[in-house]
Every structure is written in C-alpha cells, then in structure tokens.
Image 1 (tube, helix red, strand yellow):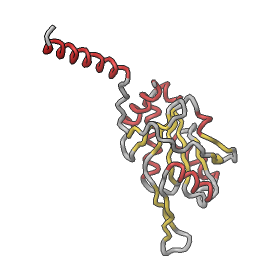
Image 2: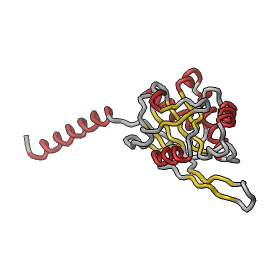
Image 3: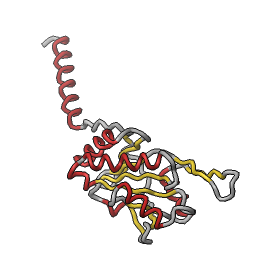
Image 4: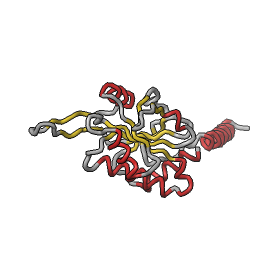
Length: 198
C-alpha cells in the first residue's frame, strides 16, 4: 500500500469515527440560549403566598420556568406569564410537566393575596414567591437578575426596572435555558418539549 492510499484510508476512517462520535453528542436545537452548565438559582428558598418556604428542588420531574417581575408591571411581566401559560397549553398532556414560578421583585406592594391572585390569572398551577427585601436581593443575586426601584415625584408611586428574561430548568433540576423576552409561546413550547424528552 503506497503512502497516498494509506493517507486516504486514514482520513476516511477518521471522518467515519468523527461522524459516529458526533451522532452520540448531538445537542438539542433550542430557540432559547442554551446555558447548560451554568449553576444559578440552586440555593433559592422563598415563601409562597401561604408562607410555605419553597425550593426549586421540589419541582423535580418538571420543566421549571422561573421569572422575576412584579404584579404592577404594565407589559413585560403579564406578557411573559401569558406566554408560559400558552406554551404549557400547547404541550397538551405534557403541559402538566411544566411549572411556572414567579418571583416578585416588589415585595412591598406584592402582598401574598395580590401575588396568589396574580399568578392564578395565568394558570392555577403557577407558583408565586415573595421574600423579604433581603431575601429578594439574595435570590436575584443568585440568578444574576437586575432590578431597581424608580421613585416618581408623587409620594409612594414608583415603578421597578428589572431583567426581562426567564430561566428554564430541566426535569433533573439543572438550569438549561435563558429565555429572552418576547420569544413567543410556540418557540418556548418547542424548547420545553425538547427538555421534557431529555
């Protein structure tokens, strides 16, 4: 066997081996940003409206969508929560394996009663979490979420600036996706379907 033939056979073998290896390592094609390996949110412990302290670990077996917002938000928050609810419905029976979690960045106005009613408007299974200002700051830091209170000239009137993305955990409790605001229910449903299959 001459040198040229040996080289061609070696290249052909390497290509076949590479394809075989690639088949085993193919990654899902998400619409969201794949942040697999990022370790945010593991230590979050916040009370729900009933006062029960909740952790993300209790939702193992489900795809969990976590969003930080506030109930008086005029656009980003209701749009995002509606998209999560619609994505859940688009999944049919698999929608039961999707958990929406809303964390308020405005515990001052978002009382337990207000929060409970707010999330139920989108889906009866969604969970709202509300900590003290210190707990809220710690949870936001855990997720690298930005928020800031903006006072107006009128006493007691303010808005909240905050990050507009969601974080999606897979059924094994691993953070997998960073979902940008406005991606749409269909795209989110597709990503959730892929996670539920994994």
